[in-house]
Length: 97
Image (cartoon, rainbow, N blue to C red):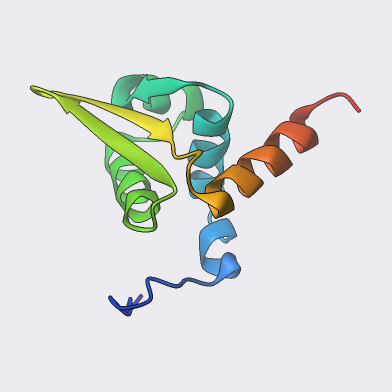
């Protein structure tokens, strides 16, 4: 995928076209902050796949990575309106209504 650095726009199909990426988005949307080991455990995906998708999501400002030495913590970026809208959708979809 070629990314235009000026606009950082992406198609919704690219974002939602991967089951693995959706699992990671859902996991982060429903949890406050997680390290990569917990994301791997909750999504049942391998380390390389999780890392690839985290980098994709990070590059589009949907998640944030915080570093504490060698430890990296990932959180859903609620400040981003697109991320927040997607999180709201996930929370509604996963609820019992």
